Image (cartoon, rainbow, N blue to C red; front, side, top):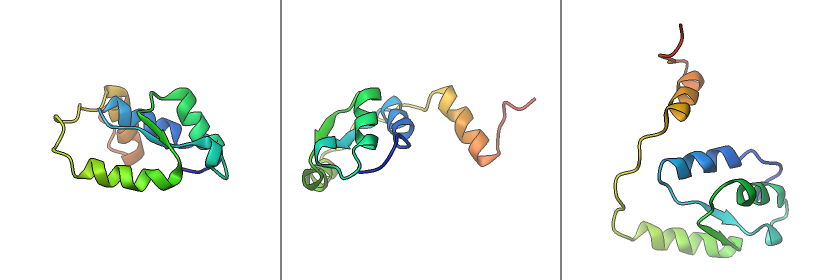
Length: 92
């Protein structure tokens, strides 16, 4: 969605790594285009749409049959989550 800088890019990349779908607002119509532009430059985006077309797409996707099981997060993401939640089993 609309935002400044690139703070959504890492999260969107993590979603893709786990088998999720990446939908990004078209930077051309965004009041602050740097966040969606960063996502487009750094993540294999599945759809880039004007803001008004994102909600209908999400409704359509929510009505589809379930997709295969999501992939387990890569170890790198598991480590980041463990650090965030202070349950880091990799601490020595």
